[in-house]
Image: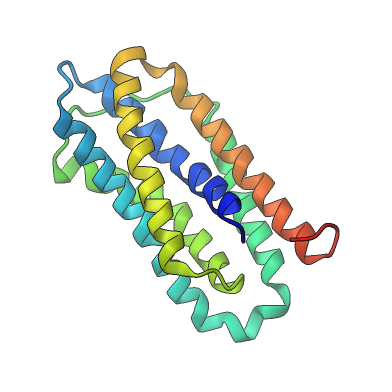
Length: 187
């Protein structure tokens, strides 16, 4: 997998966190640098942790399903992507203005569950996991911090667009992985 492919996946995975960050930005009257940092750390940290967990789990089953790994990656990325596309059609929910553990932890977990499945796919695709999860975490950190700022400045109009874009990106990457493994085009 190329660095560009990894970047595209990182951005796609980050879109749920970005959308949630936009909502967090909406909830804050006076935005402080700590809001950006806390949001980036929670979302970026969990977006890095979940694919690592998925990778470890996937490695346990790798020898049993190597012949269908590309189909698994295709299906997992497709399901996640379609789910994000469908979520993008729902109106934004009002967010809690707290940046404490009780507010941020459940959101960070919820927005990173899809990254767990991607980690499983990475195990089957022989991805070098440490640079991959570092890159995903850093990308999510930046996009989450930007999302809080955008939400605070512009409001909810970007939430559904971010989820839609993320879903399309993940579906496209799943199709690309499948087509590469089927020999339709090089990779």
